[in-house]
Amino acid sequence: MLGEVSIWLYILGLISIFLIPIPFLIFSSEKNKIISICLALYYWIIALFSLLGDFPVPIIGYGSSPIIGYFIVLLWHIGTINNN
Image (cartoon, rainbow, N blue to C red; front, side, top):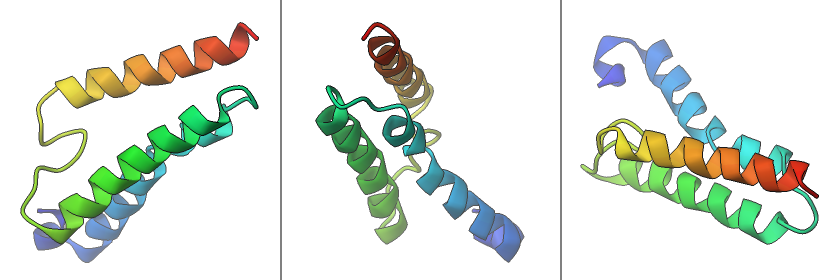
């Protein structure tokens, strides 16, 4: 939909979707490195598949559940790092 409005908004939308998993990689510890990589790959795969077909946009297209789930996982992940 952003592509219909402006090419610049479309590019910014793509960049923002692919930046979503970055906190999982930045805030990872050695103990949780595999979990961090798996979570980042999960969100990148969702973003990639939404670009390839008529699938719901990640984070927004499914309703509020992915947004809530994303922040729950992010807070859990950061909490486990701070507890180590």
